[in-house]
Length: 556
Image 1 (tube, rainbow, N blue to C red):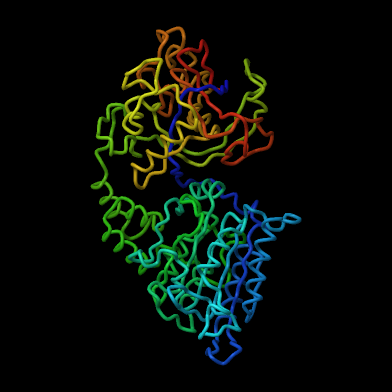
Image 2: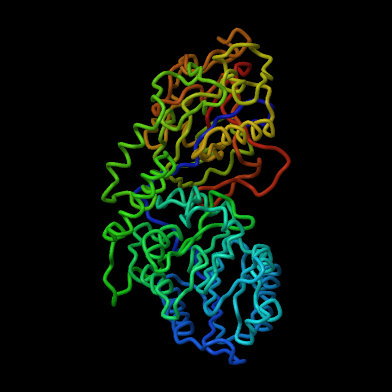
């Protein structure tokens, strides 16, 4: 049964692994993705040379975004400053109101600026058709002013692309970055991880056509590389991420471009190009791994940094690349010794991540019936109705977090049931306490992203995922085999991992302590769901699994 009392948690990683399950992208994207182009070829005052390619490039990119990826597109040819500002303000208003559902906040907005650009007094400007290069602050689009305004548009996923000289100035931290490498964690080639994170986190991403205040030629190689990637990338997962687009295609442009994040970007999000129609019939499909130049360049960067994160960055984009084997070998050498014993025996110093990812259990995704069915007894109203849930792969800790692990991260021990028992699970911690623990744990664990499991993930893991045998408890029909409860606990918590695990190798999913989930408590929906995260709000959070003080510990 579900409870909402002050007992503990189970941690899992937001590291979703690719599977053969189909992408649900095409089912829900239509009408959510929009692209607006500001393309200037003709300048009004004669002080700026006219250009040949921005409008053509805009039409070419807009066409593939519309035909292959389902974007609604709009092109403003030779716009003035007033027209650009009016359009950006209109977008702010339209997304704020979302009239008739045409500008949903959970959609995507692609903004493309192409034309002249310049820098003046530590600021960068995109130059509209009526701009005066002698006074860019009068008629230019100043990045320092419009970057935060674009950030405030009520659209969760925004990608700003600037094909103009000095466009690197759009990056608020451009002087402090050694290169333009796209290092955002979380936006992986792994389809399931990207989709799961996409629904939750806000994305603010940019591409600029230069990296170090370079001149960008009229015949833009930058725009050509974007177009090449959108046309020919092999979106085998059903979509292309902006990281894939940049690393495999755009990064090879001349001069060297830059990519990064701005504003309220949240690290685990992504900007995705959903392939709604399949590969274009007029263009041969070129798998990303065939782009050997980009492959070699990415591996060279990984070697220079020589960190777990840098090699993982490479594998995220080139999972089957020419250097994948070398990356795995290098990562194995950099990783701490793998733990085969329960994590509570890890007595490393406080600066060491206490729960390394290679100590977690991979739970293969699948579809299961969540909630109480009519055949089951002792069902609470909050466990109904039973409904189908499809989950992506995820990792989860095989043990409850111990008092020792809590002390290593937080410097205190709030437990009262079995005080000062390092191997016992920490208890008497609130959901907010747990969020503080996770925040500090992530700060101590570069390259990791720990979180609480959703209720659906917890139940699927407790039911043993694809290895389910329909036991009443998590691993057995005999409660004494798998769970510490009021009959055998001695009226206190017990060291983790001492009872029989379930088929996935997870311990104490029934009994010992209640375990927090990330969801708000609420009524189950009746319709099928994919990677549900629970209600958007509520009065209390969900805990699952039973405890040492409960007479029955039923996983339903």
